[in-house]
Image (cartoon, rainbow, N blue to C red):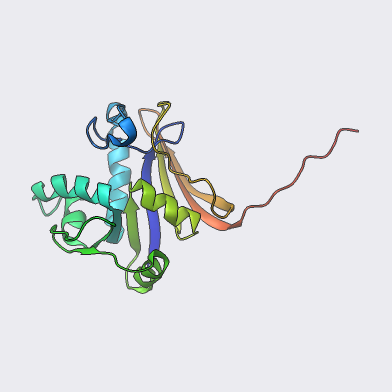
Length: 206
């Protein structure tokens, strides 16, 4: 049974919008794109290669799908650790506006998202991976559908932009299952949900 994993880049204030370039996503007037670029290094690359090596399918939002589809098909080396999986494995695209998807092995998602995710998880393989896809990621987290979070947090404060964690949803506790630090000061943390969040109070001073 496959697991649904989410991998995303975050600023210190939780922004995930347009990490890779100024024109990647200017939605809502966002003008601070490309903030990951100064911190990209071999440590980050090794981790991302490990992530894509576990992929058996992808679940992507429209914007991330279009960004990927405009770039990765041009990387034709079959041994490229990221282009190979992205160009060949199934890509399930969640969109209210797209009518067709032309990138190899791409499929539009139809029907209830929770039912679609359950069906994908029931299939063979290790991981169905979500990358970026802010609105999709927020919905998946809010409904408790993500089995693991890979959060790459970079040492930069942006002050505005679309954030990962949504308001609302079910309060959930997580277990830290992996962590490392890159040469440029980014932290890479993997979390798995353990159940409902717990709450308490510190003892009052006597």
